Length: 216
Image (cartoon, rainbow, N blue to C red; front, top):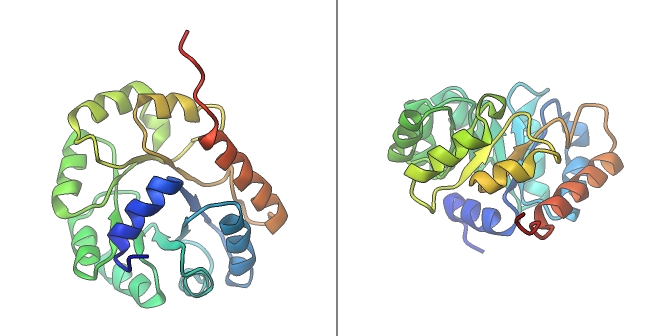
């Protein structure tokens, strides 16, 4: 397997383009929750930096699951990029596009996935070196808007709506051109057991891999 995070991101997206967003994860439960996700087939795990002791959780996950792409979310500064790199993160996720954050991630060899809302932000992020686009918050971006954005992007661009994505609306976004999704509270919430997370993770995998319904 390649050791380049950008290549690892592309490989993970080709296999299962779902990012587990573990906001609120504690270091003492990180490996158990991570194991439930990996066992269900997930290969991208994100710990937002507004979680308790996030660098400890990132380090634990990166050490326990070397075949998974472990990332940090809510990364808002170049210094935070350096901190998560030191902890073992390979994926830098943000709710916004900040050129300094993307530039620092690229300089350190990390995969950068910034948040964007507009075509202007999308093209600026890609020009800065982003490996893909996090469409956030998806509640503000209807599937029709995703389809319009997809029409002007390179077809190979990875587009991941995040925020408000559910099993009920996933198909509409996918039909509009979403490459995959970031999944948060419908997958993990503080207080959930590993068994509950594993069950939710398998439901998402089954939904993603289910055959598309025939038109009409």
